[in-house]
Amino acid sequence: MKTVDCDYFIVGSGMSGLMCALHLASYGKVVLVTKGRLADCNSNFAQGGICCVMDPADTFDKHARDTMIAGAWLGSSPVVHEICENAPEGIQDLIDCGVKFAKKPDGSWDLTREGGHSARRIFHAGDITGEKCEAAMIRRIRKSPVDIREHTVAIDLVMSRRIGVKGENRCLGAYVMDKPTGEIYAIRSPNTILATGGCGKVYLYTCNPDTATGDGIALAWRAGASVENMEFIQFHPTCLFHPQAKRFLISEAVRGEGAVLVDKHGRPFMKKYDPRGSLAPRDIVARSIDSEMKRTGDDCMFLDIRKKGAKYLKERFPNIYAKCLSFGIDMAKDLIPIVPAAHYTCGGIKAGVDGETSVRGLSAIGECACTGLHGANRLASNSLMEALVCARLAAARLGPHPDSFASNLPAIPAWKTGSAVPPDEAVLVSHMWDEIRRLMWDYVGIVRTNKRLARAARRLKTLRREIRDYYFRYLVTPDTLELRNLAVCAELIVRSAQKRHESRGLHFTLDYPRLSKKAKSTVLPGYRGV
Image (cartoon, rainbow, N blue to C red; front, side, top):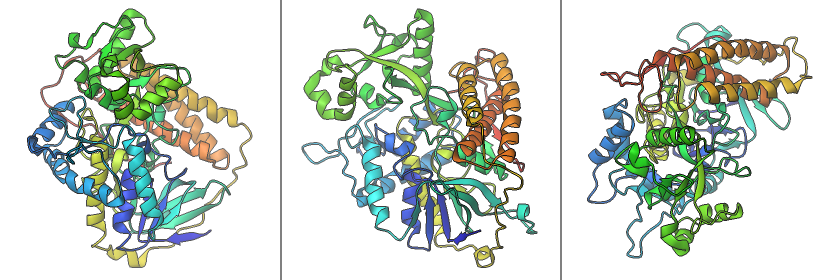
């Protein structure tokens, strides 16, 4: 079996993975793998922008307070302040990559505002901020010495104890598969950094790309890393409701610029639920829309921004305007049909702001990590800020301080297929995939109950056993690996939800509708099985 050695091994090509690779490239050999193309990631789909205090009338303390309020006071105040205060350096990193953020005619930054924010502090590049940032970073990284391996999927992390090495258990890299050829080989490194994004595809309806199957979270948990607050899955309130509009978001910035949530008759309803109206935090808005849909029996609610006019909408939201128009919806004349959809994983691998996890040699950054920033609900546009800041801080921890273990890494045994045979019933994989996503939507969605969670837990236990049997019976395929990881994340979400006996942020349960007096995180220890 081939083994590729490197100083830093990064899994994932979103904003956190690319930025960390760029920072580490000057310290040693970096290998970056991604299971699709570099641009196939959640970061690329981000529309709204990136939080950063820049207006003299705004302060880091105000940003931190907004973040803590949105997160239902479950976030870590020191972490929140540290990340907010490091945001300007993250923005500068993107500018250095060539990102051109929007400016006003006088040359000042054209900062916008989104739900939950008390000030305008969102840097944006029109309504395709993520796409422009990713494009600039990809151009930069392709000119760097980073060894980029697209269409390469991580199978499992290699842990020292599992291969018979005595002493402290640590991560030595991973087994990976080259998807076009099916070749399985090892990437060996003293520093493995997971930047794999979230697990939105665990739900039937999501605005996430097909790559968001929770791979990093599952990899780390199987390797023994603790996970935290997995019950907090953010549902974006305003996903375009149209049979052909697969996972297209109507950015929160649209509400920030004056759009109002209304019913099919054009009547606003958000003031009934929160005094902030359509600019309330996402958890409140999503539950409110869900409540109105259940109350009225309607399939969707609507956004109304017609008062802004076509000229303004075409200039401020050209991509969203064109996309809606392609479906026969003119934002300047029509109400925009919307529904909530699974959007962001607020929990994940328990990690510090510098990416350090409970497993030596393993770091986690970006959406797959839980740093303590988001608490029980993510404040709009804080995700890309976190990705940039934590990528920079992780590189600062790992780069200048080589691990002494690096000079004596043990050999990684060849991948063993045992008696596995080529799969002959792919329909089993697709059926289990669909079943997991549907039961998560029905039983572990925006509103939960003990009974629904118990049903989900029982069925997931059976499905995990069936998937484990299938995994060892047949040769691994990318679809099997994603299904395996998806099932792990589903189970972690349910287990975490069952442990929280209150309603806080994104976790709302009819059995415990009140907020507990003390905010506590839900931590599940890592598992060392398969």
